[in-house]
Structures are given as C-alpha cells and as structure tokens.
Length: 610
Image (cartoon, rainbow, N blue to C red; front, side):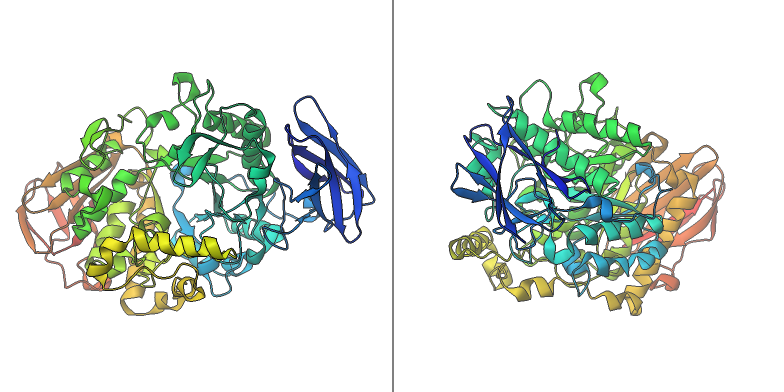
C-alpha cells in the first residue's frame, strides 16, 4: 500500500498514514493556508483521505488525537528540517531525458562511493554532476551515494536520517537528486543509493510517537530495533518495502545498498530482506530494467544472496568485509580490533578463491566460529574494496591509506582490488591518493545529544590518546566536515596524477581483457610464494589468460617463477618509471621454456597476458 502524500496532478492529493493505535487523525495544512481535514481509518490501521484545491509545495502535519502535530513518516520533503512540517511534492513535474536507459549489469560495474556533502565544495547534487565526466574518463560506470534521507542540520554522514522518504534539503532536495540520476544515466552511469533500514537517528525521530515502529525485544547499537516481526509489524514492513520501491521507481535509482543488515532482526517465516527482494524483482520484471539490492553484512552468511528456491533471501550481492580486512592488514600490519583475525597473505589468497576468509572458521576476535561457505554463489555477488566510508571514517583521525602506506603501496592496493574476480568499489578520492581525512561529523541541535555524541566519541577512542597525542576531532564542529572535503585539484598534480592514470589503466584492462572482465573465481588460481610475501594470481576465460605477481614485501624479491604453459607478454608493471616507479627489471616476455628468475620491486605488481 502506498503511504504518505500522493499528489495526482489535478490539485488533488491523497494522504495515507499507518497508525493503528491512534484514535483520531487529521491532516493539518499549515501553508499557504491553514486547514484541517479528517481522515478515515480502515480495518488494517491505515488512515485515508483526499484533499482538493491543494497545490504542490503545500506544507502539512498529521494531527493525532486532536492535539499532537507530527510530520508525515513517509514525507517526501522536509524543507524546514526534521522538526518542521512535511511538503506535498508533484513528482510528475520532473522531465526525465533517459528513457532509453536500461542499466548496467552488476558484474560489469565499477562502483565509486561518494558523500554528497564533501565530494565538492558546494556539497550539492548539482555540484556532483560537473564531476561525472572525469569519473567516466577514469573508468567508473556507477556511483554509490551515501544516505540522503533527511537528517538533522546540514552536516551528517547520512546514517542519522529520520525521514527515510525525504531527500536531504541542504543537498538539493527531490529535484536535485532526480537531476543527478538523470545526468548519470545520460552519461551511461548507474546510480546506487545507500539506505538504512536497521535504525533511525535520534534527533527528529518522530516515528516513536506512533507506538508500533520499534521494539525492545531486540537491541541494536543504536537502541531499540525496528519492529519487523512483532505485533503490528505488517505496517512497518510495508513502510520499508514501499521505501525501496519509492527510490527505484520514483527516482529511477538502479540499485540500493542496504546498510548493516546484520542489525535487522526478523524471525518470521519470510524475512523482511526476502520481502523487499521479492518486491524489487517484480518491479524489475514490470519495467524491463533490472534493479539491484546490495547488502552490507558482517555475518559472512551466503543465505543473504542465495535464491529463494534454495532458502535464501534473494538479495543480489553483498560486501565482503573479509577481503578488505585481509588486504588492509597485509598492507599496514595493523592488528587492533577485528583486524586481529587477519594479517596473513594466505588469507588474502583465500579471499580471492572463496570470497570469505571465515567460512565457519574460528575467529579469535569474536571468540567463536564465524561465517559459512559461499562457493555456490557467483563471484559477481560480492563487492570488494580497499577503502570505504566505514573503514576510513570509523578510524579516530579518519586517515586514509594514503597516510598509512607508500605511493608504491597505493598502486599495489589498486591492483589487488581491480584484479579480483569481484565487483570493485572505490571510495571517493582514493583514485588519486587523497590525503584529507574522512571524519565523523554531525550537526545536531539538541545540546544534550551533542554532548552525548562528543563524550561517546571521546570514550570510544580513549585508548588511542597516547598513540596520537590528541582526542578524536569534535564531530559537531563545522571544521570537522570541512577538513573531510576532497582536494579535487590534486588529481592533476605529480604522483597524484600518476596514481589516477594507474587506476584508469587497471579499469581499462578490467573492461577489455576477457580473463579480467569475466567474474568467475572458479577460473582463478591464487597462491602465495613464501617467504617472499608474493601473491601469484592467474585468471582465464576461454582463450584469454592473465598472470600477475603482487609483491607485498617492502624489499626487492628475487624468485624462481613457475611459468604456466605458453608465451606471456607484459601488460602493466607498477615499477616502471611511467608509473612513478624506480624502474623495472622484469622482462617484456616470459615463456615456459625460459623459467627465469624474476626480480620484483618492493610493493609492486606486474601483469602478463598470454
């Protein structure tokens, strides 16, 4: 059932609110004129009513029990912020010019995650559009936008949103997002939107007042869980199913990234993820345009992406945190927190071969067995990265890999991700070695909440004070967000430019060489050369083959290579001076007969093709 305000285009608007425990509901128009319209309740707890002589832009509340004003839980726009009235929107007024667009297969995507507020100086949807041509030139064909559901103030990562249907007003609102999606499609780029169905933020969360949306039966990191399986959960489920369809249908979004699904608790016979997947599959079939769902989960549970026919939820893909953790620890040597479970090159090789490192293996960090075998799932159902908003922003100083490893290490990192048999995700700025941090920031208005957030961050990182000699940056300060903005001009300078070109070349090879373009980890061999700390990677597809060596050692390595049958020509060598390297000592060609001793520069990667 559609909920919220549905403007029909003839100065008529239908209002629908799910509030089964409320005894009286009216629509209270507050601008441009004041008016009260009673709604009628059906037997499922939905309140309905139509209002005539109403124009787009009209501001309104729902009034409960004749005295409490509440913004629409399914508000499409909150022009005065999370504490103000909702706004009637005419979605039909936007003129789309991407009618031939039919999307990009997930297996062909190269995804670029960005935060609208810090991607540009302006921090708007419109400003993102001006940078799309360079992203296309780089080789990116999909952008993943961090959450844009209305949050308090103007500064936030987006995970404190409290109006899941409303587009953040400071970013450009409804039309701004549509213009961005329209521009992306015109340039052949898909759009993935990050959505949060496991919790709502603390400020402006008026869903609490309706009495049915949350449950204390389960607890999450953010407090009470969303009520997906308790009494009066049917309307809650519909609320989030319709939200997924709303973004895909009304805004022409190509896919949704579902935040932290491990914090969604549902023990009913049909999991809410399965219900969302079923609804999205129906929409895709109706429109002849495949839409994708990508889950973030730390469970290593392939049930999320298995088909319903074998008891799965039917989600299209999920992030593989194991790949990131294995790569990060090999590069940096870090071992704190969940990194305790990682640190060997063999674990990275296992991630290439099996997607998960922990597939019902004992996890020292968790002190229990963790994960399950995902060998029956497709390689294209896994998204991998070396950096993302969580893995950078949840560090105390928001430091990127560019602050932790060498320039040669950054090239090696790029290759490790882009040579994998999985869907790659880049985090904004990594393609040129951005050094600005990505810090945690908010702009709450409640003094007690601000104090609580500050103290929480301080306590979370108290153990790091002696290491860094400072406390975590103030998340409420404007300067914290401003420090997180990209220095976009750096992409044309010195080694930043070389790194950008290196990413571009890797993305080109990934598109054009069948052995790399075909995402099938069954057509792959990944082995470790010890003690040299070298990963040997071989991939093939029909007559196309590539052979790669990734040297994770900080020393030059000499090794006797076991060359597979055939003649091999060098395609890319990060040690070449072209890429800012010290100069390569590797031959241009290799053959089975020669079996040469290879000299690999420290932190380098070389790719040969047959």
